[in-house]
Image (cartoon, rainbow, N blue to C red; front, side, top):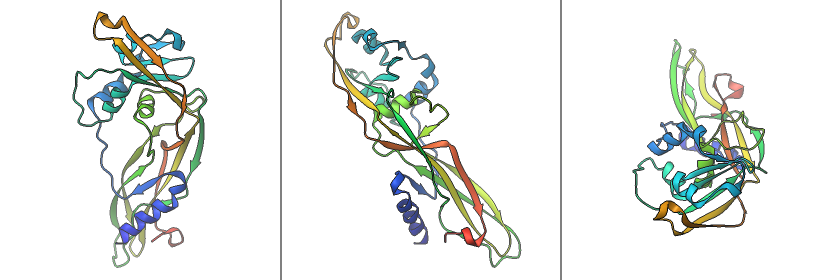
Length: 251
């Protein structure tokens, strides 16, 4: 019951920045496809302007980077499959694409206060020091579309923010020693990154794309639409602490 109350408490005080901290950690599952694109992101075909993009190019490669708009065009099916841990190859046609542009994106960074990870671990009845271990997961990014997540996987990000390491969730495990007669609590401080002013547009491939290697295919481009503002964790700035000072305990 106490553990549940701590989780609710941590969630409530972080609602303003769309974060949730839970006192457990499990290794995120990664699909073969996700790992493959992460490994080859520097080899993605790049064109200087959108005018250079052709239906044949999209059908052949599935992903194209556009330099002038700081954007990625990727198959919607590919973006969804990339984050499916149970991914297996299929012969489904990739005819719907989304271009996600970071050209006008803005980044706001915020560091949280110290937040408790679970409850307290008393060592008040012992005459010797004791060690305690605790897992934790920091989660954000609810509502992020597959296309946006995939663009980040491929290394696209707002200008002047390349020092940030975006992620939907991060975590780990801690082990701390507490002296006899004291109480221990694990705490975490997190930097969140709020991204706004992203835009995306749909690109449809139609016509005779199954034959002639895509030469007869046609491409229709939709209007730019705003992507809803979202927050993520900067996994490069997650700090943890072993707290025993009574004035900082949040039991």
